[in-house]
Image 1 (cartoon, rainbow, N blue to C red):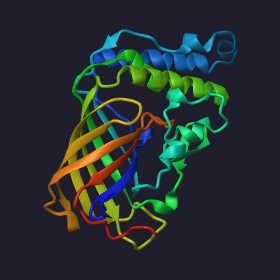
Image 2 (cartoon, rainbow, N blue to C red):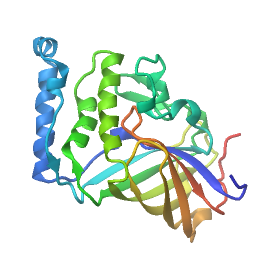
Image 3 (cartoon, helix red, strand yellow):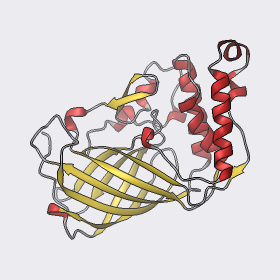
Length: 267
């Protein structure tokens, strides 16, 4: 890690996911919602196997689908990838620390709700706009949404639902191409406890990358920025530490060669 390189860790927020969609996608989501309603009826949720409530379908054309996301930025190396960014498919699902190890810099405070594991290290936030350039399977989309919509009664069920999503993600390794435009906005040092405060320094980027579980490295283009990053250009490099994490998000380490650190940089 060169001293002149700006290196950051980012965690995208799965709860900010949104999309434009076609009627096939709307029908798939309707099916998931119907099964989610059934899963909430006590008698049905007790008598019917949970795998019946998992939505299975055919290939779903979503070329052009837009997914929005964003999340906190940390100094590079903040996220302990040796502990919390391990490949879920290589872990023991009965490990009591399974959720922590597959949450990529987030802590679960209750079912479906997460918070940054390192709030004192947050130096800003990023927003991303992802455009799918290839079609994906409805199984992948459904498994990802299933676990967010259908209530899980305990950690064992949460882990099982999560692993179904990861297995579908793993099948798509090196197959799904996304175009992402992102803005990394760095805050000032006025209030170390508030990372949403107004910013003057930001970096705008665009990149293409493939979907997978862990370890992929990509190259993107810096489009410019504001403040000390005005007129910035060149390449940046992005390494996936974990995808998807337990919150339905992704965790990356990003290197901007030759760019200076933002004004606020925790010790």
